[in-house]
Structures are given as structure tokens and as C-alpha cells.
Image (cartoon, rainbow, N blue to C red; front, side, top):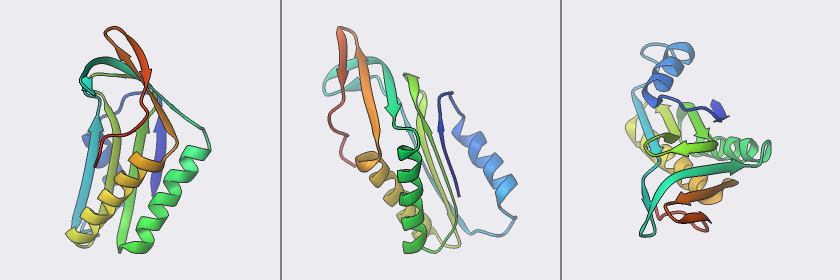
Length: 144
């Protein structure tokens, strides 16, 4: 299991490949499900030009570990990778990567969605959107 909060941009495909090569043996898994969330240029009917994403160091990582540990208890998983950006996020930048490996697709799909939905609704992250005409804190997440 690998969980990281990063201030710098990352390439989701490269991260998955590197993790797979370094942490998993060939033939060890039959399924891999992943989700990548990226920065879009609109929210609540307004044009967004940038976002500042903040977290509570230590608390955020602990929460993500708890989510992943719960997923691992609920499904027969082989490995989990979660990467999440903080800091200045630009349009099109990947913000979050959740990747789950399992012997079978159902466990991989279900666990990946579980982790992402919990992360999106409960993890201690705060978003400030930079709009064309000001700034605002995001009070709620978009529905899953």
C-alpha cells in the first residue's frame, strides 16, 4: 500500500507503471482498476482558472490510510496506490490517483470506487477556487 500527498504534478500512467514494476510480481493480479481526477475549468456555473488545495499534514495521510485499510478488509485486494496533489493546481492537472489491484475485477472496481468516494466526501482537504472575478472556498464536493 502506498499513499502520498504531493505538491508537485504527477503523471498517473507513469505512476501506475512504476508502482506495478516495483511492488507487484508479474502474474500476481488479474485486475487493476484506477481512477484519475483532474482539474476542470468550471464549477457551479462559473469559470475556474486555478485552484489552491490545502490539507492537514499527518491527519490527511492518516485518514487516507484508514480508508485504504478498510477497503483492504472489505475486499480481497493485492495492493493499493493513492496519490493526491496539494498546492497550486492548474487546469487539466491530475489531482488524485486511486489504483487498486486484485485477483478479480469486481473487488478492484468496488474497492477503487469505495476509496475514491470516501476520499472525496470525508478526507481533510480544502479547495479554494480562483475564478475570473475572485476567489471562493468550495463548500461541498460534486456528487459521485
